[in-house]
Length: 314
Length: 314
Image (cartoon, rainbow over all chains, first blue to last red; front, side, top):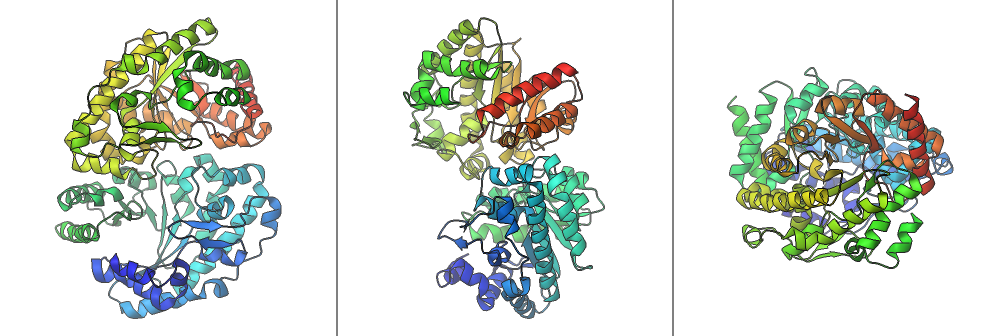
């Protein structure tokens, strides 16, 4: 959105995350401009790793870079617990300001990265294609992997509970890259830690559990926890819902690239997602992953209107 | 392998593909050094697109680059049929030479890229993360997409049949990146073309149909065709086999990153793959995708020995 780009022209990405006024403004933009049914907190999943001293930076036009990746027993042993309140207190400020500005119009969804996905950045040193350092750590240094997960589970729970205390009405946990794992690796090296994380969350606030490329992991993700399981676009929504069980809610799953096409085509594909949900209660319409930066804003606005119109018809 | 690097020091990648003597030597290296149970033709899936005039080059240390990507109706309209014999006759020469050198020791598997995966390179201009140009062409110019698929199906069938005529005892079709698609997009825009391709293949030669990230696509890939369905590592082999049906063979699916760990760990994971196959006839042990370049050759040799030993025990 041009509104977002105007703010970014004045602030680096990290500055923007750390400035509650500006972060509040950015959080509200999609609500004002697009008419979506919830506000999603503007923040980054890596903010909580800054105090680990791994050297987090965001290059211009690139993803995050971790200057001192954590790859060995010794690297993990050096990590202390994260003082979440002093590390990301500014996020809690943003949550409180957004809540006030929203004045109950729509709910606010907080979020955090899941421990595996956050670990993937700090072990690989940034974004990755094959996650070879992470997998090697899992396979060859399971005790170090376990300790790393425990540090991140603890910090993530406190981070999300702080957002809830500040007013977030739901939280979403992004295990964005967990689909790189074999199901056996998820079961052995991720599932117990996700279970621990969900157990530590403040009861009564719905948690959305999302990943991509997870078609074969969905029953395990359900077992790990979450009130809502996020489905990416690479699974049929009806099949995905069957896989996690109809006693849990699902979120998804329009193919984000569909938004590059014109509105009549977008309508057809949005209808197909709603049809796959079959009018069942507990479906939250969403894209199957983040929006591509090439997407015209008018197409997103058109999608919001289309979904409102088609859902009201039911 | 150092043997391969020695040859590559003297030839560019494309030169190597086009030199039947050198390509034969490279094809034989894993058979001699590792003791695998089949030879896999050394070639590249993009060789057949050279005559389309899209400007294929292989940069040093990078993937392929297509200088004139095909992105519109007009671009597709310009494409003529591919004269396979004159474009890739050198591959057929390599097949004949390899067959002679193998003298029946192990079978030779030929291969080609599937039309979607080959199209993904020529539409995107090289490797891609999000396949946005491909998807946009599918959504907004379905007639152009269909024509592009037809050109590639026709060329791929002739390419594989030429390999079979020259002596390949099986062929593998790599739809490596098809896992980027929603199941509905696979069904509408890929499945009919894969069916057409399998129908055109010389009867009596087994065909292996492989892709990655395909957990949700497996039943559709089975419907498209193939005597063997390749499973990547992101699906449990027992589940994947159930999804495609036990009346078809499967190939797979050790997580390739396991080969970075030491042989005792490799043995444990190889055993788990064999256990998932349950001793059922029609399982071809393989990695779940290509080998990572960081993999020590001794670990691959250890895996071959381990699988031979564990399989003989059954």
